[in-house]
Image 1: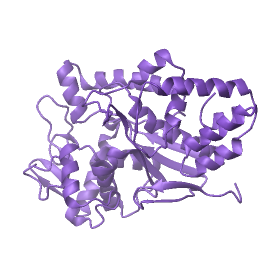
Image 2: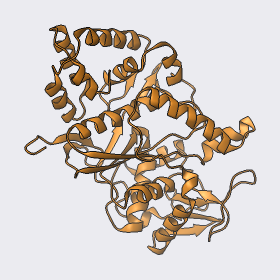
Image 3: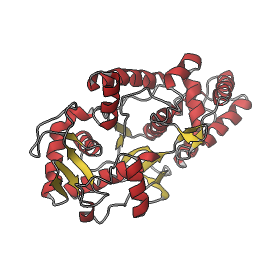
Image 4: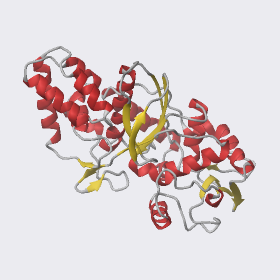
Length: 375
């Protein structure tokens, strides 16, 4: 709106809160799940942050186009399908149905597009060809690798030193000990498939995509070379988003992402929720006992980019808050305060406090609550 103060968001790459002032149509990409297990509260917190951002952007007059991919072929899902003795795409279909049902119950705005990695094999092959032609990749051992030494801006998103990068790559599937790599930080674009894994034909032999390549290919296919905002959980900053940025800009020569937004980790018993660790609070379990609006409020009580701990007291607290808001009835009290809080780097705790105060004074707060996606 003319004369309106700019919305401000923390940008990971710039390590600062800056104006986020896109055009009328906001192109966003958020990394989706690998569908080999149910959605947990770490997932919900991530997608609810982008949901609230979209609601405020639409409130400001923008159209938002948020693409959320589905990683339906990678090491994790193939490993789980092998353990269960099922086809990996059957496992993906079952878990995506459960995920989409959970997210709809939480009333997330529908994704503009939710493309699968397996839908993008031709796009991925073409993209890898572009990276090779630009001189930023090489073939070795039946695989194609990105050559990080050829891209001086590697590190532009995470700003990590080399030892930290190597440590995180080892923890997060980067396989720095691969003997075919020229540099341990080089990452795979295309890899040979094991005998019991899916394989597609390519100029470099039969195989399957690396982890990072799908998001670059899908983002460009759905939204174009440059997007306004890209994000996911903060555990994706390195290596996933760092590698995405490098391969995308190496292939096109254009800026890939104008603004990087990352959401903090949700912990349980002192450790971040993780499928590999099994310390999870599942969305579908909470929905059996609690209202979706209360779940949204339990998440909104925490600033999006801070790490926080889930505990059993959160849902009763959120339910009490919801009841107080509803008792206040309809009205637009606190709406401008909530808008101001969201424009201040999505300060949802401040937004909740403003609505609490208005409701306590007997003023209707339905419009302010609705801006947070709460009925």
